[in-house]
Length: 422
Image 1 (cartoon, rainbow, N blue to C red):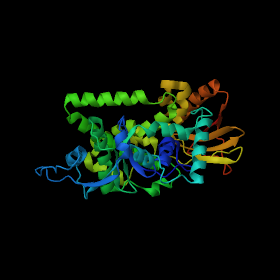
Image 2: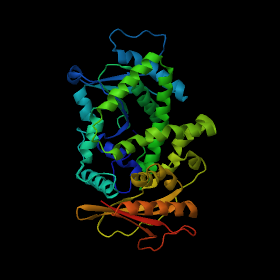
Image 3: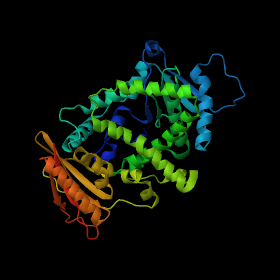
Image 4: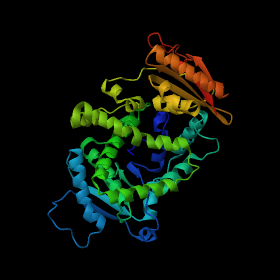
């Protein structure tokens, strides 16, 4: 995953789990969630090694002292160059770590979280509870550690400019992981995917970049997978099945949904850009990436330049602990708890929103003003929200519960206001 800043107020709910993970994976631009090697106790004791890899000359023989990973990396770099249509401008630094050291770096043991980051993580936890997306009592930090701790084989670190790999053993699945992470390295060399300016914004811009970056990497990864013999593809499927079976069944569903979002939606977004204007259009998107989850979900709206509407924040009824943007994804997840398959139709047409969250005893309340693209979209959303309120006693729906600046209207539309406590 690319590296938005650690979760801070206003980051946008599309980034909740993604940025939570980055509190643990400090600076990691790509953490491919694939099955990690089991039974590598010998790897844990091996000292860290750093190698510099370039596409090289395919006619040059490999050196006898090289590991299998070192021997195959140049060919993987060449594949990424050809598939992406760009050339590496410098060598890629690859850091090989034993299992124990890899986990420590992955989970940020060398860079402990500050008190502010810990507070922000707890605020995120409470917002999810307030929206009814996370059961009270779930420790979000432990859930993320469980999900990522044993399931990541490698990641690209934009701050240290290195590709970090767990161990030196190569399996078909790990080769796919390396292709994915090398794509991040190539993106970073050409487009600088570490964007602190986006991280500082209080909207979904950082997460929009995440969807673009991961969508591009997944596309190249799939191209590599399709190039492999059938028996290797089956071996990779077996590794993925092993990983899926190893996920803790108590992992919160919202965490899986949010972490998976850029990997699922991003590839289609990228393919639509290529269909509209080829590689030049894709490259241009790295200069001006999508800024909302709506644009990722509906690429035609990004291509049309559909920007989010400005919406005033609603009133809070207590000390504000968080504020920001739900986005179409956040709205979709909220509606899905009750509406199921009908939620996408109700959330489509999202135009803009702002939310605030405050503590109410042990509960957290979240209130959002939401504006849709058209009056018809707005009427459909209100009907959907009323259905949710009829099923959940802690949810209420109003019209235009505005902040101190007065009504937040766009044309003739008044925002729908929804309040959810949990």
